[in-house]
Every structure is written in C-alpha cells, then in structure tokens.
Image (tube, rainbow, N blue to C red; front, side, top):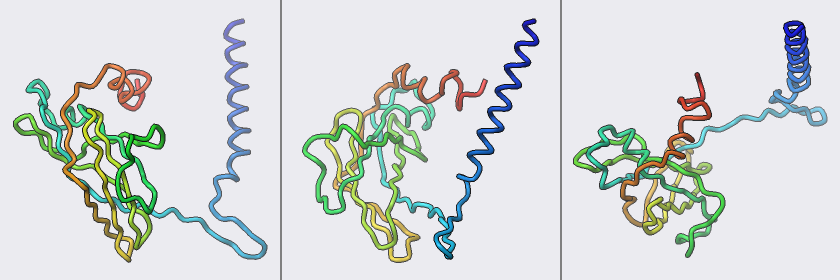
Length: 185
C-alpha cells in the first residue's frame, strides 16, 4: 500500500514538473516581437577593474591564501554618479560582500585584489568600500574606456583590513545547506 502511494506521489510530482516547464518555456525566449519589428536582447558582460587589497595580522595557523581571504570581508556599495566621497555613515542596504581574490600569503599578510564592476563604455562608476573590521571607508572609482573593453580603478586610500576569524555561521553559509561546498552530498 505504501509503495503504491509513493509511486502515485512521484507520478503527480513528475506531471506537475512537466506542466510547469511547458508553461515556463516561452518565457525563456530572447526575441520579442513588437509590431512588425523583431528585437533581440543581448547581455553584455561587465568590464571589471581590480583594486589591490591587503589583509594583515593573519595568524600562523592559517596557511593558505584562500583561507586567509575568507578572514575578512569587504562590503562594497555602488554610489550615485555625482558622488565625490563616501557617505558619512555606512549604508544599511545595497551592499555586496566580497573577498580578496588571487592573493598571496606571506609573513602574516595576504595581498590580492578586489574586483569592481565598471559601467558602460565611457562611463565612471563610484563605489564606497567598507571593511568588516570597522576601518575607515574608501572611495573608489572605476572608469571604462570609450571602447568599453578596459576598466581602470582608483581609490582614495589603500584598501587594508585586519584578519578576523570567520564565524561558524559564515563558514556554514559559504558551504551551503548540507555542510559541503555547493550543497552537494
């Protein structure tokens, strides 16, 4: 009896999934017809610029650059186009947490980069970078050249923060629901 119920439940779930996919499939189309004209939406890959970042006071028990990079988070906020400085107080919404990438660890100091997205060709994008350790905020600009292929970043000061040990909650969030990377069992 239980086996028959399980089979019925699986059949219902399968049928529902197929129906949902059939209904959703047209929304995946990229071409949209307006009147007699056809327009196609294309996604442009964002140009990124790198800012040098340093994490100091990494304990000797942390031996890999990857582990050290997770020792401190930076929170980046995109600012208005006409911004010339960071806000007086750190914003409470709109921030994106990022880690140092492509780092090298030597003598308790991790040196790597933070990647910031540029805008469209010929534009400048302004950012405020805050470190998790409460250090002073840094104003950064990313300027994209006229061709839209090269982005250059500048900062008002060096991007630096002290290492802080990741909490168990942060480690679990990085690994996913099942305690393993990407949620796989």
